[in-house]
Length: 266
Image (cartoon, rainbow, N blue to C red; front, side, top):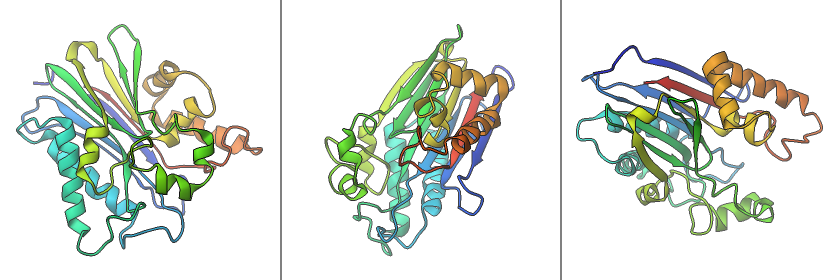
């Protein structure tokens, strides 16, 4: 059973009030009360007219996120890559008859998935969202899939080139779209439960505090979330975005992006 009450905190804020939030966040505890899971997705917004699906990205992340939430706490303890593969397959089946799922910009998302039990904490990260694990001594470990960040800047100059040659291809980067086999590309692992005091998952709209604005490292970021609250981290990011009128830090990136933070003390 849970050793005590589980502290959770979730915030998910759209980048613009007139734009649908394409992130997804959930924390689930099975009926047995043993363990739990968290799911965070960041939907990938397609460029105009580059789309092979009649459904929105928000529709996709809601479907995929719901399937991940269910499968991650269902009896059977499927390995997390199988959980992701099953959720992708289920979501693809929901619109394969109406949409071109082979299109490079069919709806897709980054994934953070974590599951804990009395014995261990398992994790899976795909693309550029982040999972932070805090140990009992306070040290913070960042679990990252940094393949997108490692691509040469020249490769990112054109979105069309990125889609055609680097997205969901060897030598590029991977996101959860319509092919279940991408689950094997995720960063995965497990640590003993006693080595994790708390977890935080963040989409890249929130990780900007670290990786774009350089306000601190991952441990500093975790401290803000734990001590000041998840909404405070997002508030700080929004303040920095508004202040970057010269786009010194944001460059060609969106001025504001959907920002999601989930904090759990299991």
